Length: 61
Figure 1 (cartoon, helix red, strand yellow):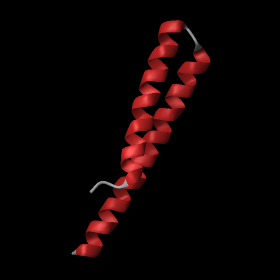
Figure 2 (tube, one colour; figure 1 turned 90 degrees about the vertical axis):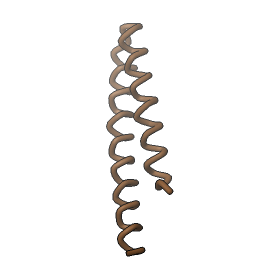
Figure 3 (cartoon, helix red, strand yellow; figure 1 turned 135 degrees about the vertical axis):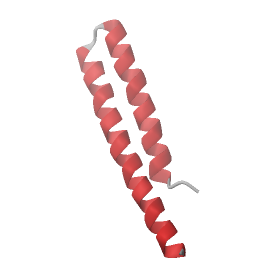
């Protein structure tokens, strides 16, 4: 089963994509920047979750 951080990170990344798109549509630079920041945060969290998954799999083998 995937680590909770991977799922949460993917959700943040998606939310950031939506927020950035909304900022582009409305011309809101602050919203665009927040969306990009959320995407980075989500990608990092997803990577941490992936590392946890790998470590967990290595312990089983």
